[in-house]
Image 1 (spheres, rainbow, N blue to C red):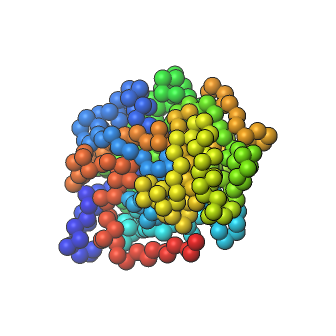
Image 2: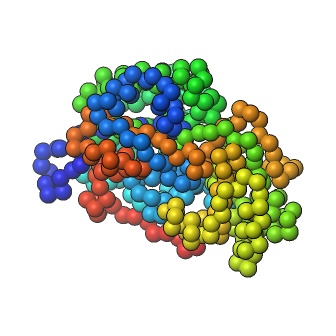
Image 3: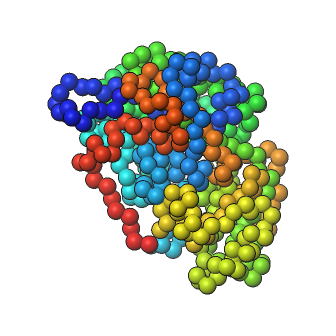
Length: 398
């Protein structure tokens, strides 16, 4: 499957058509709980690996790692939100200007391979669309796509994933010259329902049927599937800005790495937070106050977190805070800590890292032991050292 760098680009094509399926929120417990006969047949006849997501276990950091085949320390996308030192404000990480590594689409284009990025969430096309010939966000499809497939369902639904998969099947049937299709679903159903819920099983059964249709539409294609994170119930949320101010150690800003525009998923609450200090001299007192908060599992300095979690230090906080399995961080209106309703499910911590990797019908695929992290899913395709012609932006000064 990986291209032979010793061959001329003008020689007979050796690239197999490949579909990368990034199933948002599809943790290993969902894989274990749902029958999914098509996916499990693929796993039995191909590669199945128990892999780890990267931290923080949020979508943008992991989706970018899968698409670029690198750690956040290299590609620069360290979460869904960060402190933009240029503006002094908390900003969403959803601009290609922030991306510091070539996408899979750029690497494939270096070998003359055309590609498409299909996603439920439009933020993905803005962040990862560089190099893709076809861009489609089911959240905001063109009139042409809706003429083909009908009106797209709302972003806060499981049905939008079905519409997205039908779009992928349409491209497999009508655009065989596209050598790479990257398909990114939404995790709204996983936020709503645990693996054992009937609604969850129905969602995954429907997706599995669409995988079978995709395979029938492109029997020559390789299918590579993984996830960005899992999902867990959470029982408490801390507003770290309020909590630290109340303890006499106010900070410049505390940011949930989970916060994005899809608030009905998670209210912007997640298991990792960036804490930016007013002064470096405050580090010891702020660290002590954070460690005293019930549910805070770990507090790391910028340097410690960058090394341990493979993060780009210029874009994370002076301190990085991790919650335990029950604890998340975010903005609260009036209190420093809030008990979450019993149905509240989200991610972002060390406890949402277990994800499956499944590879079906791929030529030259590595052994299952190669796939230790989700970023390994497509890293072996069009490797970076063979894509020297792709220009990579430099990180902006801190």
